[in-house]
Image 1 (tube, rainbow, N blue to C red):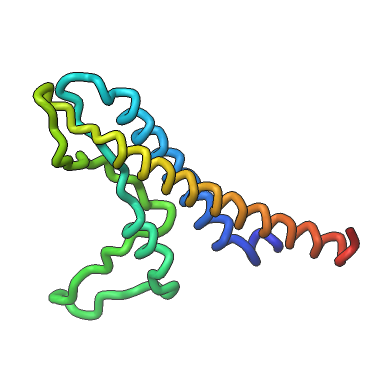
Image 2 (cartoon, rainbow, N blue to C red):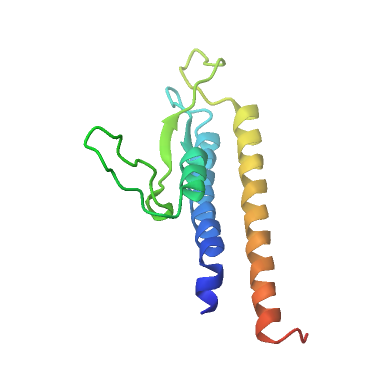
Length: 137
């Protein structure tokens, strides 16, 4: 019963943490390959797909006419990170596209968002624990 009450919040936070962890690995690999000739920096894009899945209507959409556009918003569980090449203006003679300042900024921002999500999850668990114990410490 409690799972049903908080299922949406748990699912969104879980998916966000999974995708942030995946992005952290890709950004770390970029930094590790900063001196590798020909290495192309990559990133994981998922924010728009995650936002669309979260804001999608909860009722099932139905096509009532064959010429209507199909419903294309993925469910939360279908959202995946998309690996893309990150362009850089600072490509050296070795054709390496890693810009350390951009990578460190992206890694720091991603870590901040990951930590914020874990804090929200922790507060959700604290609320559940308080509810289960009927407000007692």
